[in-house]
Amino acid sequence: MLQRSIASYLEHASAAAPMFSDRGIPDTLGYARLIGLHDTGAIESACRSYRYAPLVFLAPAWKEIYETDRERKQDFAEAERTFTAVAQAYREFGYELVELPRLPPLDRARYVIERAASHSGLFRKYVS
Picture 1 (cartoon, rainbow, N blue to C red):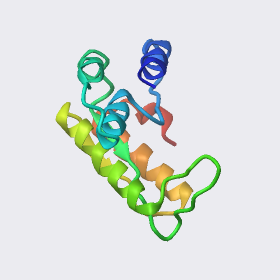
Picture 2 (cartoon, rainbow, N blue to C red):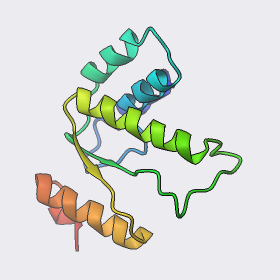
Picture 3 (cartoon, rainbow, N blue to C red):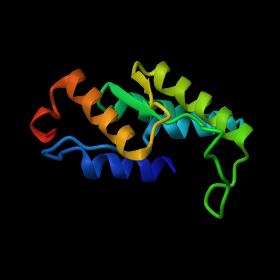
């Protein structure tokens, strides 16, 4: 997972336009801690070396819409623990966390774009 995250980071690091990632390297650290992996030194080193923009949006587990399927096998309690572990990993490496509001998808997308635009100015030319 760490190797794929680093490869994705490197592949997109030189992008001319702002980009969003579904998962980042600190997610890997959160997952590793959640499963009790004791040697997380390589992941922590990668978190220091491969930095994302300082603003990170996190989607909390949302009980009213949460479902399991072939891809999402965690029960809701484990999803909540995962959210907490991942959030802690990002905080530990100095990221500013924004919890996504529980809104319909289009409203949620607007919220993200508006918040990102007001935070850094990077998205202003892309928001209409």
